[in-house]
Image (cartoon, rainbow, N blue to C red; front, side, top):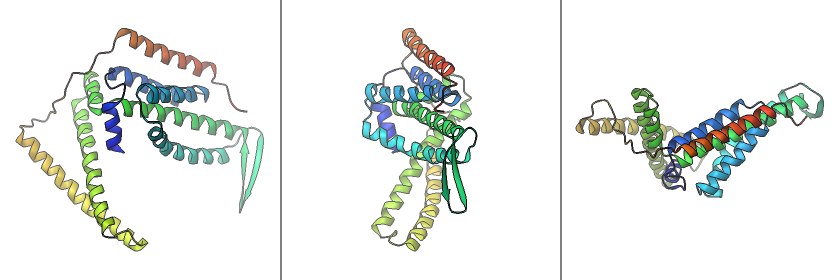
Length: 260
């Protein structure tokens, strides 16, 4: 999954669009989603960002749907908890279960729908950034915004070691599967413990090897970074600002809108 995300970020249809525009659009959409008092604006943002991601960036629909299914499934479980445990308003239904009776009220339904819309809109906006903007360009934009260099360097190291971590875990897991290490539950627990221990040692060794390679290349405490990101044109910035302003107006006008 992490390789696929990075591959799409490097080869999508919006690859040569200024990362400033993409980050402004995605981050602004996320802020509008999490701060919207009503569910309509986040839902519309989710639809718009999904259409841009699929239509303009040319991300496959099946992959995008599978990617969204992960956070939406967690959000759905959280929404069910909110639906049954949040009171207020008129009683809509009673669901008797052993030792307790679950109730659904209008207040719980409204809050659950708002929560689901916020999560869906925010995740669509976040995946728009992840699928269209390479991390190297995000780091370059952060450097232009005067983010402290120590934070950028740490982020680059963490991003690098995520790849190392997953690659090592995949190699160990495949070797265990080939040796039938997950045939039974007891063997699965034992194999997972061995995987965790070996993964810690291997990633530690990979970190030391990386530090030796950096010292051999005269590392002085600062990472070099390319600064050739395409600039953002004034009409494009105006279009993004108009887009965000329009959804801000929708959020303000439909803040009191609810299902009940």
